[in-house]
Length: 273
Length: 288
Image 1 (tube, rainbow over the protein chains, first blue to last red):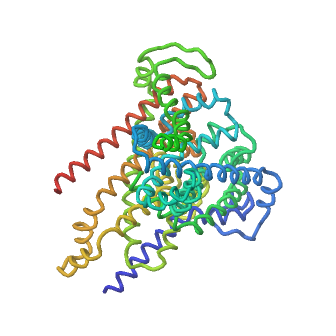
Image 2 (tube, each protein chain N blue to C red):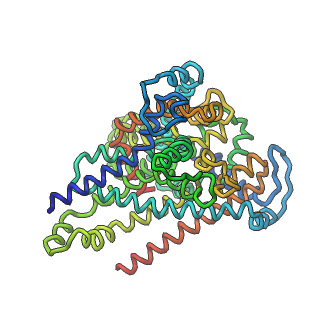
Image 3 (cartoon, rainbow over the protein chains, first blue to last red):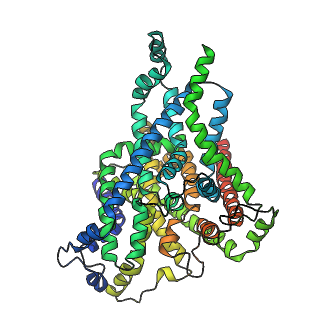
């Protein structure tokens, strides 16, 4: 009786998993078809392993340059986010001042005011700073928008850290700066890894901010190039889907390698954020 | 000594303070203020127009319609999405094998860019669904071209994208439910349904409210799905509020009016979140 129930449960879960996977399976099989084959049937398996779509993407589109542009934006944004969140979180945990209380209040309010609410004015600000279509502008906006939850996570991590090590470092004659960068930040490694992975995931796939701040920038980030690609190759689903396939592989691999951090980070972010 | 220490902390906080000031406080304040002006595109001069933008927002049918469409979309994605996430979490919290593999299946749609999600579902509705209908010998309908089905169609894509995220949060909450408590209930003769209804769900109810608040805020701001799948059509039936704000600000260049629309969006999201919070407080008082 019990065993039968478990099998039934497993069958339901695997059926749901198949339903969830089916859109991606459709992307996979249709990436290996010609345009004509998709027109005939989008649900049949490809008649042969046609690789022309991938060749055409690599030779004709700016896939590689946008891929590396996205890698660059993610690398810089995530490093800066980790650094700023770590030092801010540390200072907020250790310094008991009115300024800190105000700053915490501001960070809390960012969690309740979504970017979409002030995006119009934000673009006006970015325009006034002459940072439109500028990759530095995009990175700064990502940094500012992505900071709040990382700062909170770092702050609560620091609150749980003992002060003794820091104090003995100061007694041993280390400067405050050295103490933070050589001792505190390495101690925060677990939380910083979580913050980095979640931030990288968000920046990699983000579209609306990039579109508004960096819409005509060159080279394009991957989501921007995907929009452009979709517009250029209207209805050539073979090429569009093949493009999605190759651009999704890195992020899926990233998830598989980093899943512990991702799962842990989401749960922590939901509870503390 | 003390002063030196304060200067040091201040230096550490400086980057964050500057970034929040420039990219959060200034635009938020400016956005409230712009909503009372006739600011237009790149023009550097504007006039105060009082409540005119707000009056226009509530009389402009093309805008009020987006409130309804967004609420309908959010209602479907929040209710059905959270129910699905909770079911998935309960299934994965049982004694099933290959949990990590299954979790990957449900979570991978969440790491895809929403833009790509929109395009993939566009492909499904335009190319795959008609083929399935043909294979079944049924007459298909253009799901994205019908004003009654377009919002549920977008919601399906939204749920596919978001379900894994909330599932992860629910799994974490379920793992926090004490094993002893469940064991004790089982010894007392409670069945699976009773354990779920009387122990697990009440214990994770704070998490359910958190997920409801998070998902309301997330789904109310949907932009990419109508942008990629329908461009707001047919005849504006799937234009969501953020899509409309985007069109008003960046296509019609009416920054002032778009800011007023943004404020309406903010008030609606804030109101729903506050309501859910109060609901939870009340429940907690009742439990105590």
